[in-house]
Image: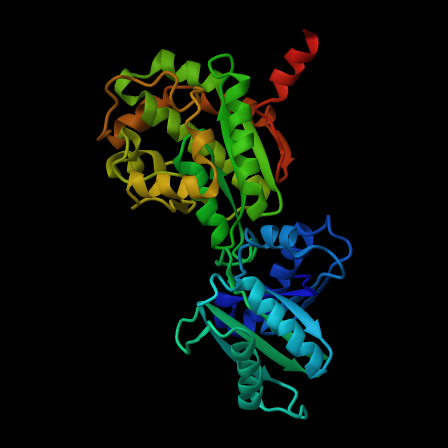
Length: 406
């Protein structure tokens, strides 16, 4: 079936009152950006829904992109027809046949009529099309509640629209509608899931990734970039900020007692993330911490680490079980990449017995003994900023280069 448009419904945006126009404007911009490779589309945002006219563009690739745009509750591929009931009858029957899962499946007709000059009212339209379909398909069942297929009919001034599918989308709020923040991205399972959840609530996130060559490899850095590329379809594109951390880690390793290595190291990470946030105009810092999951994520450790800033630290997965986090990582396609065995700077120099209840005063004392300011200045001077787009690939780059030399 060749569809003529996709009707997009906003969902949660309907609760935004006077700010609704701003949310719809943000969503429209995100949709336009996401669909930039389809120039023949015409996008028309309305108060209650958005209409994407296909103008000959196949519906399936467009719908695959809409699936990952936050702020869209659901959508329906639809066919626009003239107000000619002969044409409506023929198309409605073809559409139901195409989407019916079995000959004896159930259906109903649901008509909405905004053009009250049309000859048939909603009940007459339901009866007319219902009789047509049951006569043509004798095994079909009529069911008013929870049918297998609902033929939706919209009678508007410019034509009659038919659809039989309502496809659930990503939900949430349009990315960028809730402000900007940085997210501390490791190479593990949790922080990409936290990124997804932050994006879903409308936060425009920028990834901050610490790397420590030669202790961490280029593959570890590329893994973090490719994780970002997995998340980029939900945002259109994502800024990736790589921060060199070797000097700080070596100094911490050399001068801080073993039990406090992790605590002091993460205090420096948070200080750097906060400075980057301020430079980039962010309002908060997100991370992938979950209470009690590892030694650095006890409440005592969080208190000792968070001591370095008053900026809000937001943890979307903070109360989730590991199994819940893994399930969501599998859903969004980051899990297999996250478990690839490349060391990141969170795991190198990890002490065998880190303090799970570090003393705040001692953490401050050990950090103050280091010449931290010049090291952080050098780390910030060495950071690199790139924009990562959907479908960007990083993990196979060096393999391809090596193969070319053979």
